[in-house]
Image (cartoon, rainbow, N blue to C red; front, side, top):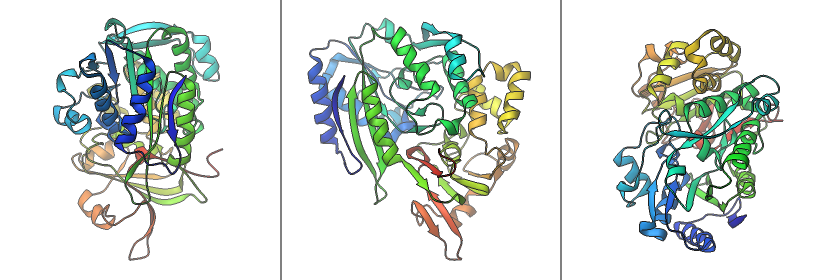
Length: 423
């Protein structure tokens, strides 16, 4: 049931609007004694989930006893990141999710269902895993807070992905990522109903129905003035809430282009992107828009590693970003990659499939490191002088010498495609 809905392409929700919407929805629930909040981490800083988590704490006070950022495979948040995202919310409430050690299995989606969803390409069961705190904490309300936006693994981020992936375990994360990659990222991005989503919905229906989960979902886009705008807030406990948010996200976060792009420049905000695990949003959010033989240039001032997880970082360095057939062959012949299917999926997501070139301009990684994973390298300082984020505006730009580029200031907020590739 949807407890609160507000949103449109022209809406701009301020903090007071978020407060009123959240209060209205929570008021309909009646009294709650012990609450767990599950927001995203700082890699979703622009989601406004930090503001909503703080507002939930202000609403419930000491009854909100725990905050578990849905890290997935990401590293734990620092104190400064928590303060930056969640304001004066008490630091003592925050817990750290360990995707390798802190999970329990609620049930298992049968292999036959995975086989159906993968069109016969995969034949394994899928463990429904969550952080043990969700089960052992005896909460009478779990607030799953997040943003709905196009996503490479599942089609649209948000909803139960925040639970089963964000607080999930190694097997659940690995196999879900690989299912999405094998099925085909470009067949899913921007779509609410996908094979991976159906697997998570199966898990919700069969193994998590007794969990008192309420979803608090935002839709955020960049306005004409270049500033972030909250376009929608949807609060509820089922798919209807997610579908409403997805429909709005597709309107405000997706840009259909008449012609493929020959040169794209993407800027990765230092506060959000320090790895290619995250920074490759510059690749997969633009892949359907870039022309064969085109070029993607990524300005990445904070880039210092490939994977957020040390083991995955090592695998990326070992195998590099190559074509899908090559990755599948690596999986077939190498146990280390076969046991880390989310890393294999990531290698597929970060590839241009040899259609266009990808040039990274890192703040910290060396030329040798960048080229070792099959990207091109360019000097950050020199490239930034030519393509200055302070001078470029989102969309088409013509430089003084006549060069035309398409600029994206934050790839996490959108999806770009030209009409012949999005069908």
